[in-house]
Image (tube, rainbow, N blue to C red):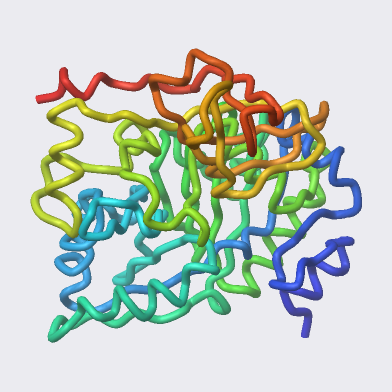
Length: 352
């Protein structure tokens, strides 16, 4: 019987120790395809935790930053699990399949989620379990992603960001992107069929996790890693601009601080996209500095190599320093060239 790992290996995947796909033999070409063509990616670098039981919606509603009641088989969402101080511990993609909800996030944070989030269940009828082995996830993103997917499925894929559909045991999520992007979830046997059919398309390039994350960076969509957990308020990650936080849903862990930041308009740091003309790609949590002074003015959130050299990154930077030179690692380090965001930021003081 062919397994998922067999399928990836048979297609030339180079696997990391954790099992995620680093690349398919041509990392630079795969990065270029991420920006200019259509890529197919194994998303095993995302854990899939199932939350099921009669009280699941109520439980998640009291823990996460977004309105879980808006999640359905027709729509997913980004949602943050914050600390009592309002800092994002984990940023989830939340979706529904059947009667269960699934949380997608970096697997390095899975121990935190399973242990500490479970502490809040108490007597609620909710069970959290790792569903990663039985529900695989792949990504299809790029200029021809929509047409390729429609031809394969025989039905138009979701047309709007965060929209979803499930057909023949395949769940399709449309996610943020400057080009059409989709996440597909299915059981292993079905996913092997999907991968083979998609990878056979001439317009599609199999690519590693770095290429998918480069598209995330291009879209201005952050990921919280182990080194940046509990570092940022949701607004510092621009979650208010990308449907990652609700200000009308009521109470959840950290809600008072998040709401106060929004309505008082006192946000001092926010997320930027930047290019760094340096071959070494920084790590999440690496410090950023202004020309003068030894105190950090920001941190790297995510970064990936750019096919034309250097890297693209998402960085949280003090707004007051964003129009002056910002450097990586020290005040004399590599310079960040800030780029326009692909979405509009709303002035929190103008929100009702």
